[in-house]
Image 1 (tube, one colour):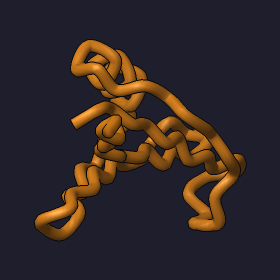
Image 2: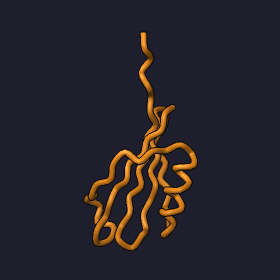
Image 3: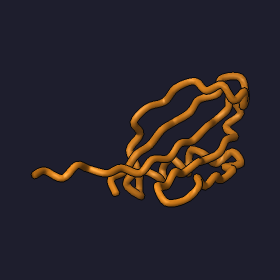
Image 4: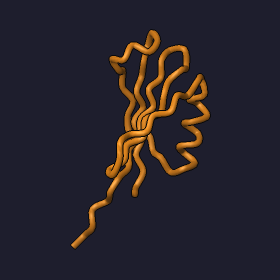
Length: 77
């Protein structure tokens, strides 16, 4: 029997002014949220170094800036 891959997910929500936050999701506890304070490009690079892969980006409804986007990442557990 083939074992299915299990994934961990996180997302970054960013507004047009490059402010935003990182939200990490876990199966055994509540999500953890970190405010990025205009440092989201460095966070994206760090996520890549940690094995996170960008799986999609889409407009969000949070109203954080003129053109808010949400980036969703995954990595294998």
